Length: 276
Picture 1 (cartoon, helix red, strand yellow):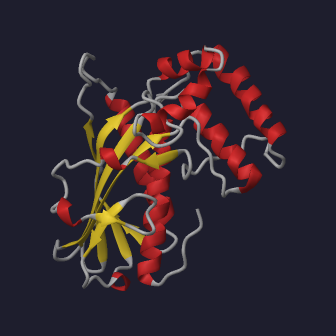
Picture 2: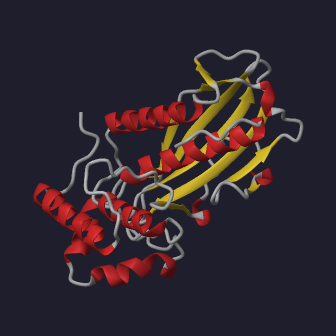
């Protein structure tokens, strides 16, 4: 089963290859092999105007912006001693779709896509957390239970992205459309987005220990000026190419959240920050 495919195979390979090679020519040090993997750190960005309030969390009023989460809002119990948890249980991830926009048809998503997405996010969390905590499948003493809801899930409208790309110099207007419409810089109105609401509970008592939320939107024209020449090129290429697949931005967001959660838990537990 294929989660997604480019809208036009003839565009996908030659154009993608040309774009990558152009980026490599512009930015020295860019890799020219298949190992160009994207973490999602610069390819998606928080859209604070679209943070969700689905009812999954216990108290949205106490969520506040964090210094570590790149836009994520969180709350944690002041009595929490993260060092008392050496195991983590990642509960089954639930999903809600964004309501259809006015004038558009009902939004439908292939159920197999949803399973693939939730499996991807689960596996991303496991890989990020297991260097510092044992991942288990049963709650109990010393177990931190993570409950996760993906909220207002929206795929990228690939046909619109392709149409915009085929118009000469359209990228100049598109690149500035995010800020003009109140969205993150580098995004466009047809980019995919996904919200996340996450809750942490004590595995023995069920007490709520912390809660977080975020909404990430894809950036077709993503830049990372702090990553150096090669990193900036990789972010730009990744943001652009991902605009031609329905769910790539969602996977970028999942990897970003997994890395941030693992790093924060490592800080709270006094453990070494796991590599990502």
